[in-house]
Length: 102
Length: 187
Image (cartoon, rainbow over all chains, first blue to last red; front, side, top):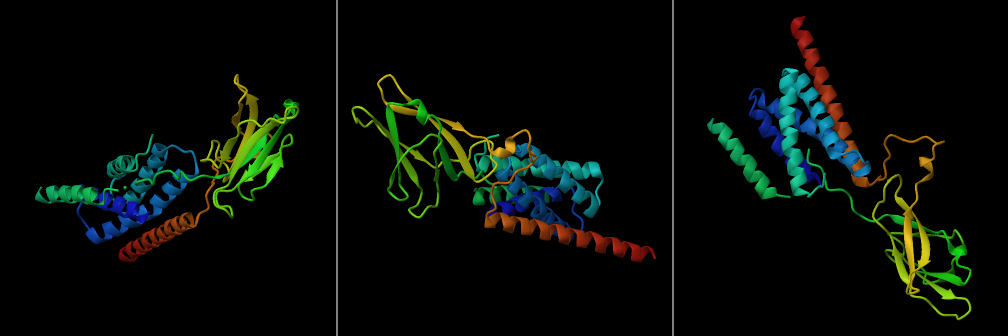
């Protein structure tokens, strides 16, 4: 189960560094924590409720954008763009790997 | 630019190698305990209905509105019900059918499915049935309808909640310590 969390982090961290390469260790720490915070919640909600995956992913995108905005000090629009790209990649990767029907 | 290419290559290789991924896990497709209600037994005055539970190998006569719970993890494994009828006059036994536990049915509100069975005889006089998913009581208009309802309290979910809460606490701590440092610098 946790391999999916590891894979999510492994995909999202390099994507962030395509936009910004400052304070690398701190950035990695924040992105790992952000994913460790959002990934379990989305999976619990996805498994136990009937909320559509894309709605859940939208919530995750906004939450991670807020974390990037506050902790990594990006403009909110840039934080939202980074988070949107990160989560779009991982969402569709997840749909492809797990054959999830939307 | 070179670094960008390298990171793309690393990303691609990693995905290919692990190939199995805010990557959602596939939906849980395991069966739930299922409770069957027999809704129209009294409509067949000429027949008596029977059910055999695999859990204890006992045969029961079905009465109107009788209910049988099938457990996924019963003492003998996944439980089943064999159902048939006997015509009262001729004592002729009909064909039988088997009811088993089922995957979660909408609306998901607990870890048990509630299903009503309605018998009927088809043109060739074979015993058949229709099933209707029953809505749990909480869906009554008079009662409170939760916005979210959880149906799984597995240990793995507790672990996930723990990881999420722990990460949130660490994030808050990092945020507070960063703000404290900034304040010290200004002072």
